[in-house]
Image (cartoon, rainbow, N blue to C red):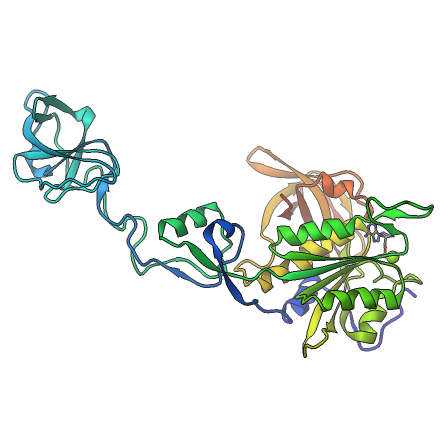
Length: 419
Ligand code: AMP
Ligand code: MG
């Protein structure tokens, strides 16, 4: 059946065309509020505008004395400037007194700068003499003083919608006083593995069977991409059974369906038929390796007027994982309203040559090594699309462009990080 064309279906798209066709069917889901401590790795659903300055008040960057800088002019160990200590300020405990000419206030890091003072002289540059302090050097206005709003100004947009919240952003939200934050709802992503040969871990293994890898790797990839996997189990290569499992998934309010296996040209590859019969097929086959027989379409959800997007990924374990990174992860990030949709790329130098003759884009699994100010990408052994070890050992996918016949060692390539 290779070379046979399905009527009216676009075939042999480039990666960008295929991804564009998937993403144009998707948009950001609704927002929800979550407690700040549950917000790690979630995507901001709105801009965050600071309501306050951070810090809220000028404060000391050092332990020392708050004073009037002008009074220290010309001060030295031989000719110190004597000031009377009239009070103390610690972090959380502002001084009540005001610094007037001839006085200073003992101050600790983080304490509010008292009224009248415009600089801090650190302990190391002072000598204490009863209730007097001697300034042993001159300081300029603003020395060792953090001004109000030097980090964040009230009214400023601190975090933009679409930002993925890392620990730094969580800390910033807490510093701004946010107990909860508006984030995009997690996409619910149905995952179905298809194949008569597949057996879940724990179940008996009759002859001819293999364990399912994709149901687990794809579910884990969904979590890593910010989605919520809905595991639909394993379906045999049987159209009614695949349809039934997918219907079960659709009834659970799913935003995206991922099916692995059964999209190739074998006698039992039924997924395309299911899409054609119960929804529509958008395209089939992408000029990439691994992952060529990728299929995309939609299925009608019961009680909903809209089609749920379905990505049919080839069953070989490496193909299913690579197809996920290239197509499903960007789809999930689009549903999340994330600012960064396609995986970020880095440059590396390929350590090995790759024979590459078929004008497809290749995604080869590489380990990255740093050296000589450059990143070296070394193939993780055999690259067959059934060799899951090639993914286990990989730090990244190196992208080999379609227009090169052969890739020589030393070629600069772009890589997508997997760690
Ligand atoms: P298919 O895309 O259905 O033609 O499958 C291609 C190859 O991948 C076959 O050798 C299948 O046995 C294997 N395969 C398909 N699905 C899975 C899976 N979920 N886990 C492990 N191997 C699979
Ligand atoms: Mg199969």
